[in-house]
Amino acid sequence: MVLESACYDVTIIGGGPAGLYSAFYSGMRDLKTKVIEYEEELGGKVNVYKEKTIWDVGGLPPTTGAQLISQLTDQAFTFQPTIVLGEQVIDIKKMDNGYFHITTNKNRDHYSKTIILATGYGILKQTKLNIPGAEKFETTNLYYAVKELGKFRGKDVVISGGGNSAVDWANELEPIAKSVTVVHRRDQFGGHEKFVARMRNSSIDILTPYAIDDLESSQDGTCCIENVTLKHCENEQCQFRKTDAVIVNHGYQPDLSFLDHNSIGLKVEERRLRTSNQMETDATGIFAAGDISNHSSSIPLIAGTFTDAALAVNAAKLYIHPDADRYARVSSHNDRFKSQ
Ligand SMILES: Cc1cc2nc3c(=O)[nH]c(=O)nc-3n(C[C@H](O)[C@H](O)[C@H](O)COP(=O)(O)OP(=O)(O)OC[C@H]3O[C@@H](n4cnc5c(N)ncnc54)[C@H](O)[C@@H]3O)c2cc1C
Image (cartoon, rainbow, N blue to C red; front, side):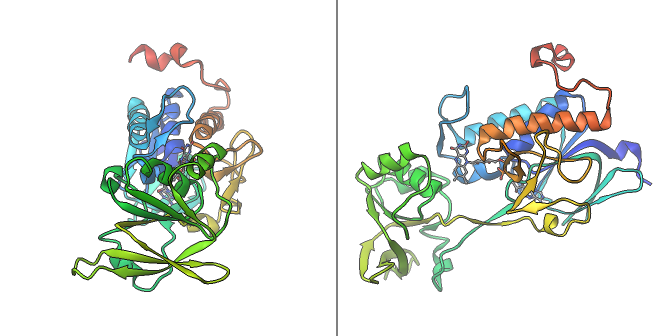
């Protein structure tokens, strides 16, 4: 028997942009709210690009990832939700009274009338370089994320990868590094056309179709990479680069295993959850927002998470209180702000 006082109206799983905005919006709708996040910090994927400039959130001047996290977190705390950090949700069950029982890897139990899944593509593990012994350089000059741009000032940097991240980091580093070489298996790059064009028209040395084949350690006993061997993917000819830092952006292997084996009817298709345009999943009482949600208008960008979050919270409100207003009122008319 679960005490009503231990039960939340809404439990949001994931503390990235979708989860943080859901927490704010849920407070606006006067719902008792909890956020459960696996990492020890809020912000979701934005934590991997804290120093990158984000240009495409409406109404915000170009903002760093760190600033965006700070502002989203402040906003999420407006109505004092309960925040649980460092816990991975591993199971969700529906109880006889219709409430949800959520279990985490810390053997803790959480109870909720509704759930908003804001897990992104899941817990992210970076795809590592497939070269024996590469891991020993991770404490020196092999990077899977750029947390501090200043570290690369005046350095010869090799970036491996051809997606958004590789292109963005190449452009961000070009003005401050001594040299930037981008190595990619294909001739085509992902990301916004404008940023790919900027990379191609800069001093960045682009090598395609090449891949890193070997890392050579320095002789001074510091366990740093000093040279990289780059192999042509078709004719296998090699090029060599002296380097101070290697950045690898080969994407992520996401862990969404708790949804793969769920007993409540959630359907995962290509690592995303099928949702209606009101953010309902296939399991009644469970809604989704952000990158995890797959609906006809979904867009895997920060701006898209905000609309999803508002829709998911409104749907959760109606699920608990069918007579409630369908939408929250304009924020300046919202009763909750009269006391702020
Ligand atoms: C390098 C890079 C650059 C980007 N640049 C931009 C940009 O410039 N502009 C833009 O609009 N978008 C950008 N994006 C995309 C943007 O970051 C995502 O669209 C956004 O973060 C999605 O937010 P989300 O809350 O849905 O998911 P996420 O940010 O992925 O957050 C999900 C959270 O859920 C947690 N979680 C997952 N599973 C569990 C579990 N079982 N239990 C507990 N917690 C769990 C995760 O730890 C994570 O913190 C970029 C993405 C990357 C990778």
